[in-house]
Image (tube, rainbow, N blue to C red; front, side):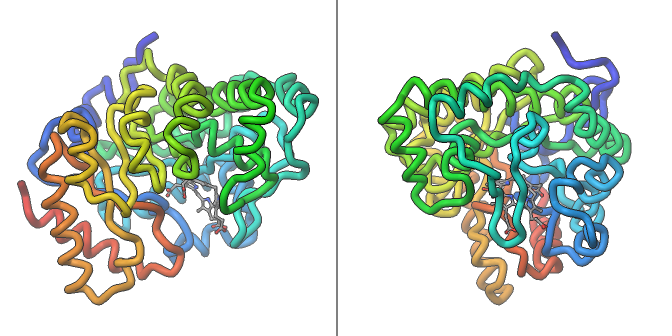
Length: 356
Ligand code: CP3
């Protein structure tokens, strides 16, 4: 299957955009920049629009998810939008009792821990076109407004999703999940395969509706050893990405604390590796053999530092990124809610002022 003729990548809108070109390994005239979690609580217009609407409900109302996606593009002039949604949305669409508790994160009605729990889960899905309709509609409204600015679709990787499902909520070391993968590998395998198909369907729906690239977030993969990642996470991530492999969109793969996993994260099918702030981009580039486009990796903590300190940090990150085949500037994790939005705008202006 190929993309519809009216898709932004095929009808001339985004194929030559700086972000799509950089994801393809080119160095466009100016360095592209966007920010993970650019839509959200750092913006007063976000807080106003979200007032009285629960997080996951907001994700499932197409007019609202579209408006929240567009807000940071209008305000900051970033080179890409990222669809306003959440990694747990496909779980909710599959019927899982999950909610997002403000200040906490995703919380499950009941954790999924036993072979029976997984078998029950596996009876749901695959996600139908009807279940995905709010996503398709939200993406459609968004790309109609974005013009030449590409929309990045995203999904959570199976390991990170499984970590929430098994733990029942956020956890520091993902102990219960890591125990399950060793104590009952076949149950773990079934769980991650189910998660791969649900999250893969969510990703595919965004691309078919108009996303010009995608990012797989394996936020918690860094808690795994390389051996455990290869044996117990990578196969399911490859399976999730296989859902979009025929669509010819570039795939970014991001996790935190993943220096030891960068090559493995590329090898599951990524075109671009997202690097967190702990690994300098020149080091990431070396580890990846100098052949992989990189995205990252400003330290979110620097956003609150005095401008000269932050500016020096931006210049350092960009200089290190210049060693890679291509680079899309981003943060090394999401925008903290306390960030002054004017600082993000100033970074975009700085970078766009340089040309190449
Ligand atoms: O601008 C964007 O990046 C797009 C939207 C986006 C959200 N979540 C919206 C959101 C994206 C890409 C995500 C991904 C996501 N969600 C990840 C992977 C990225 C990462 O941070 O590692 C993870 C682990 C989640 C799960 C999740 N959802 C957490 C940990 C939280 C934080 C809880 C809190 O309140 O601090 C959420 C909630 C969430 N997702 C918010 C937003 C804007 C905040 C909810 C609110 O505004 O009430």
